[in-house]
Length: 320
Image (cartoon, rainbow, N blue to C red; front, side, top):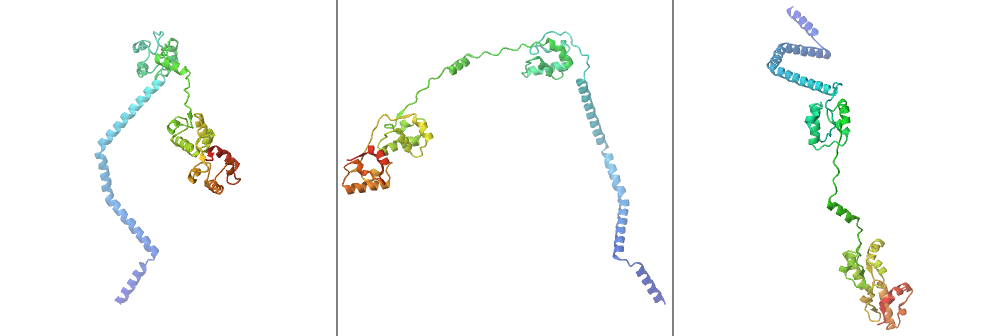
């Protein structure tokens, strides 16, 4: 019988406390909230007491901070009050003992006697001490603290005597005279390309070391210049460079060294700038075929030695 009752009781308890998952989560959350409430009630008063004691210990410092802030605010209000009074002065300011004066020369004592405030007078004196100068009446109105009411009373009495501009020094006048005198252009030297060496050619405008050497070397290869236009055959010569140097060059003498057509070797003929390799072979082969040239016109050939080349080369050839 007892066993039956015990068994029924255990089944009743099991059925009563058997929760699903959702109910289990709810019970867990409620338990956590309950524990947090206990902790707050137990530990809260201790921490609140410490915080209040902390503020109580620092009360003197907080009092000092309030005092400093109060003093700062009071000074700020004083400054605003002074500024307000300065910007809005009484309109019945009247100056006395007014007389004609030069603001660049008058003393602070004289200004004070006229009734100007010390603030304005000090600013006027500081402006002069720093090198400032009143160039016209209106400059005086720009002084700090100078009110329109005061300036209008002073304006009729302001007389500015500016110093005369300094006279030019004697050496400056002489310098100007020199500039006004027309300079006589010095004639540049004119160099003869038929005889000049590379050092002399450097005197010519537009000729540097490269072209000075090139002009001399080209003259040797040609056998002498027949005209200045032959300079256009120089390496890298263009119209701009040619026009720069041409005014300083001349061809006063013509000295020509000719090629002995019947005795010159292959290298000598090829060295001339007007004759290329194929033309040199043609001249030597024809000379071997003829035995020797009896007249210069024999070298003419429509392909190898046309008339245009013959005209250029004729002055540089001989039948020796």
